[in-house]
Image (cartoon, rainbow over all chains, first blue to last red; front, top):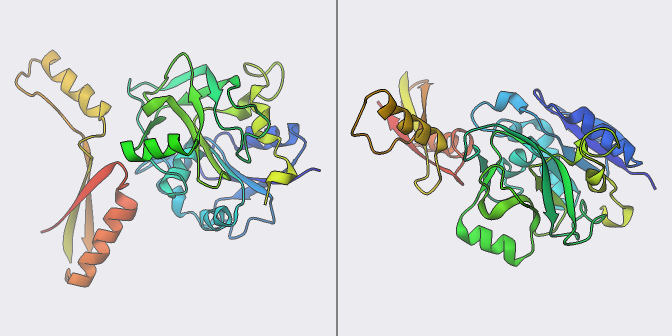
Length: 223
Length: 80
């Protein structure tokens, strides 16, 4: 059955249209949500897309965290609503304290854009159920502030609870601690991912279709 | 009216590649003897009326929730 998946557009979002397209390619209905919205229009899941919301002023994601729609997203996440934050969306999830840690400037001080090999380590989240644990995928990665940091205790906890969703393989493009590319919350409904699966959902565009699995949410895992 | 300054710095254990880049540029410009640079942010807030204890508490809340991210940064509030 097709689900209603909301994609939030903030001022400065870049990948909202690609994310909506990915949702549709995966067979679901994409619902455009606006940062100033006070309700989520009965969507079954929410994607926070990549980009430079509010110009990345102050810190990436710091101002978006206080956007009216985020109040609804935080409340929804607490009820079990699946939320996927990609790139800037991951930064917003960390700033909102829906996920632990933070994303800081790439260690090498350069914006990185490449097709990135990832290992999917947790295939039990709402967003990764289409994959097998241990599966390797290639999707685009493009970020300037994608270096994941957290204290040792938090990192050990993430590893211990199998909450590292994806790890960089072959190359660590931004200096992220323990090669972390994506994590989830304890419940497994909120996932943050620095690389961009929405840019790898159709043959002929991007490195392949490995990213599509993130958008093929199944009803049984939603709500 | 009072001016309140909030300084925000990355925590010591967080790598600061911007500061490192600045430190790396100094010897190239002929400046010797600076072994490390860390880069932070300074906010100047114009506050109406007196800075009471209650207002100061609010300023700490502003500094700790919006101006800094406690996961990676420390802040200091200075009332002049």
